[in-house]
Image (tube, rainbow over all chains, first blue to last red; front, side, top):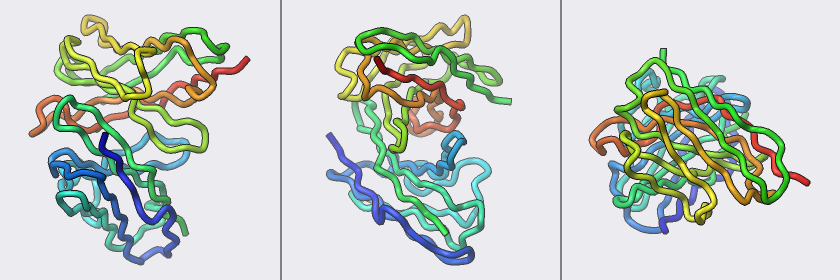
Length: 109
Length: 123
């Protein structure tokens, strides 16, 4: 079973600052199977990045994903007030298609 | 507009069963794999299960251990999650979600989410 670890658990930043969130897998995973989500209280989660580095439809360019193997990163280049939320990485096993989420990183002010 | 609307949540006693439903609209339901994801109070997201676009294949998180069954009825644009032998630790908001179509075929990550239905297991 592949386990995802996210760091830091909490990131305290100010609007305009750069946020760098890490997701580490216990085994090598395909970049095609790594996604990032944003989750705000009382709302449904939102897909931000799929295939490690592709922005989902409508996601602003300040969000970017990178990485390969076991280490992946979500970067928010300049935080907007609406970006303060919890961010999860998710991976999919090659086969069978079992998915797992990381524990999340909370980005707060 | 794409919509997923969950129903069927509620308060049940330990050991009881519950069936959740998710009505889809605004897209060709029969072309997409569908997921269930849950979030316990104060906890993170936890993936539960996925079912193929045609309903012929289903896969589960290890913790399910045969207690939950995912199914779908493409004629009704609806998927289901049958919850059995419920435990207090199954208390959570259960989200219905759509798998993204892409290079991974129909087994992509989640691109559309419902608002969730709350299941509370308590005596």
